[in-house]
Amino acid sequence: MQKSNMPSSASQTLRRLFLITLIGLLAACSSLRLAYNNGDTLLYWWLDGYVDLNSDQKDWVKKDIDKLFQWHRKTQLEDYIQILQTGQRQLAGNPTTADLLGDFDEIKKRTQRLLLQAKPELAELARSLQPDQVDKLEKKFASNLDDFRKKNMKGDREAQQKFSYKKSMEQFELWFGKFTTEQEVQLRKASDARPLDNELWLAERQRRQGAILTLVRKVQKDKLSKEATMALIDTLVKDSFNRLDNSEHKAFFDASEKGTAELILTAIRIATPQQKAHAQQRMQGWIGDFQSLAK
Image (cartoon, rainbow, N blue to C red; front, side, top):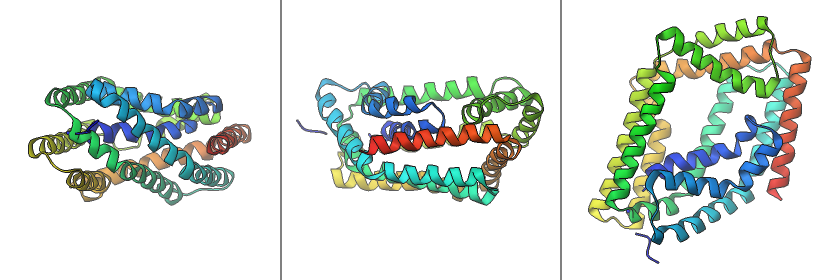
């Protein structure tokens, strides 16, 4: 069956695929295994939600997703074990801001690796999209922007800071367990110290979506070959990862990333031995999960 015009939603959706493997950083051990073992189905339904796959696409899209998961299971999970072991060592020691920024960079590299690995599959999907599916993609993007506004831009600055703090606390409590009132005060202070400009983050999302839609429409309009489409996807993925470093707002994005690292360091610094033990046990459970999954 011919695969003939999408990298976009696929780009965002495959980014989520990588996050499925890191759900262990935010969820219980059994949830990680469950999520990963059903990840191909989750990815398929995410993708279908963006473009409404037609009957001609469904079969080979599922096979392409399965192929990608086989590669990921065989080649990437052992690497994630090493990342978690590094995290255990850092938690037991005195990590620095530079250490955490280095961890962020390592995660970005692995996300980019996944997307570039999927270039052939993304190119086939891009070439198969129909005009109504591109329209669906555009509407889905618009819906995502509305959702971002509703969640992140509601109320004044203090309300937005509170929302951001609550999101961080949900993750910290999964890592460390419950915090005391005194600890929460320190975490809220560190959270609020981060630069806040949701208008700028919204504009960046809109820019990425615009670039994606432009690519999809060019593939469709010019009836590009698979090789030409892969070249466009390669440029899009790499540009998306280099964008913030080359942005006119680089100072803000750098400060935002540094502020997040400082927030995490605050949580590590104020954690009690019992809370750190809780985090160590959780990470060890994820290591065991990845070892089992890799087999």
